[in-house]
Length: 109
Image 1 (spheres, rainbow, N blue to C red):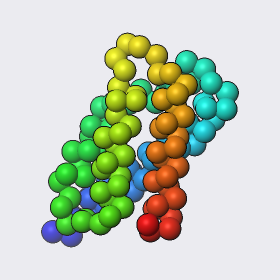
Image 2 (cartoon, rainbow, N blue to C red):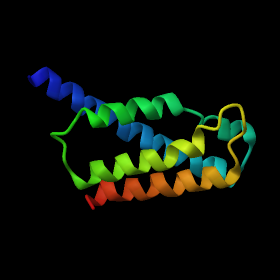
Image 3 (cartoon, rainbow, N blue to C red):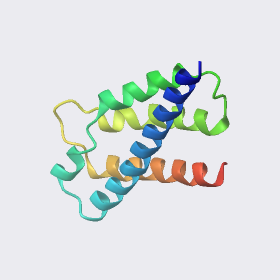
C-alpha cells in the first residue's frame, strides 16, 4: 500500500515538474517566438498520461488537483495540433494557464 502511495506522489511531483518546466519554456518562447521553440510544447501524449494518472488518484481530492485537471483539459487542444505549428497565441495562453497554476500551488489556493 505504501509503495502505491509513493508512486502516486512521485507522479504528482513529475506533473509539478512538467507544469513548471512548461511555464518557463512558454515564458521564453513567448518573448522570442519561433515555430521551432513552440514545437517543444507539442506533447499531447504526455498530457494524456498525466490526465489518466490524475483520474486514478481519487484520494487526492483537493481543489488544486481539480484545477490542474481542468487546466490540462484547457491546454491539450492548444498543443495537440497534429502536424500544424503551434501559434504564438497558444504559447501565450499555455503560459497564462501554467503561471496561474504555479501561483495556486505555491499559495495553496
